[in-house]
Amino acid sequence: MRLETLLPLGKVDPGLRTPDTPLDLHAVAANAALLEELGYGGMAVEETKDDPFAVLTLAASATRSLRLGTAVAIAFPRSPTVMALQAWTLQKLSGGRFTLGMGTQVRGHIRRRYGMTWSAPAPWMREYVQAVRAVWHTWQTGAPLDHHGEHYDLDLMVPLFDAGPIADPDIPIHLAGVNTNMCAVAGEVADGLRPHPVCTPSYIAEVMLPAVRRGAGRSGRSLEGFRVAMKPLVASARTESELVAKVRDARARIAFYASTPGYRAAFDHLGLGDLADEAKGLSKAQRWEELPDMVDDETLHRFAVIGTHDEIGDKLLERFSSVVTDVEFSIAVRDDTDRDRLRSLAATIQSASDAPARATITGM
Image: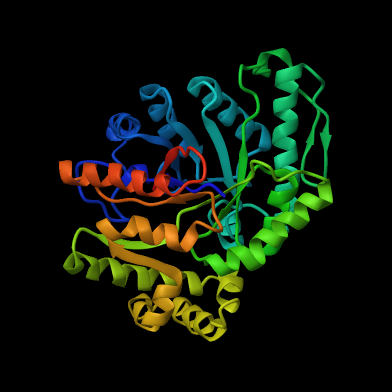
């Protein structure tokens, strides 16, 4: 597999950021242009505090070669036709540089944050991808819209709402996944898989990738060109002293993930079911401050890649080069030294590639 580098947009700017710091939308264009200038090939944005399609529109207008992607946009709250139009528009604007990364979100969020009815996510996502592609096919070819499934019946596309053909209609779709059913769906109908940060290399190799292959076998698809893109859990800083706070943050993140039932399989794989049970109990009691202390050093290093900025590129290569094609990482740009580190990080990871690689960046 070819390993590529990705960096989050939200961390590539002149100031320090924390996870609670809002993205500076007015800096998106300049940040994207900076990444392109530094030699990074792309940028992807998560759907958390800002609309990723709006953020990527700003980036697309300021760049010419930077690849763009959602990592990920939440699928189920959007109609497939709405998602299709957002992706189609960005593909047109960017000149064919867009990748549609989609995720399901967990049951509680679908029900209580989006106010929707929950359904089994893997078959729902399979049909969702098929419906999005049916809409694209209609726009590109003029064929009647004709998708009928358990969740969606789509058979109306009047001229006023027909987006029409574009120069680059083959938009890649990547699906976020942890459990085997969703990995199989990615292999069956998508162009790439996005393992969650809680997924260790052994879990990816022994559980997720075999499921991808099973899914591809169900539909008779080749996996040539299939991507495995991941933002691992990383704790990194300029110096060892600055690294202390990052490590504690990583412990808290691991414990939080352990408390989430949807990620349980990744912990069971490592024999850490008891940790998941305990973390779930603390989470229900809202005893958040106790979570970091649950994660001992052995567990910390099984899930997180830890090192100074000068070390982290080699450590990412050592851990992930055999199981992913795209690895994501971020450091805050405060001065020219940090800017040079970003350039050096890309060079380090690309130098290990078995083919010319494009460096890519992902968002917060």
